[in-house]
Amino acid sequence: MSDSISIHYVGTRDLRSNLAHYLRSAEAGHTILVTVDGKVVAQLGPVGQSNENPSVDALIASGLVEAPTNSKKQGPKVIYDLPAGLSSDRALREIRGR
Image 1 (cartoon, rainbow, N blue to C red):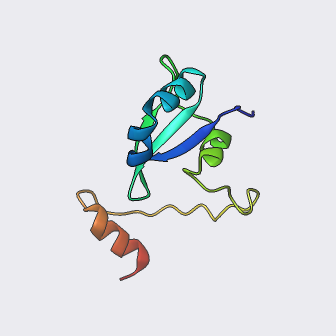
Image 2 (cartoon, one colour):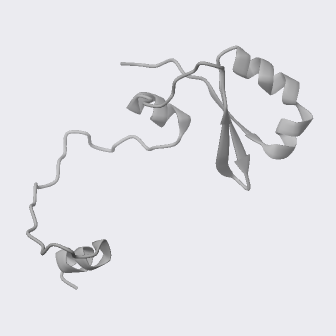
């Protein structure tokens, strides 16, 4: 399952200066991630592109997630019995024993 995906990062200044270039790139099927101070804030891509459920490989290629270091290693399955109405913050403190 390998999605061929081309992703480019561009800052707002470069986007403004070269908007036509990036629009043609999006039209050609590329995804452009717009950054502000190094943080991705917007995505520009071809019309009709459905990236609602991108593959894990596509997310790794985009740099939005990191590949697992050991995909065969699984942690133990632990079930906690917590009282109803407990806030998530309090539940985490209970689980962590604090």
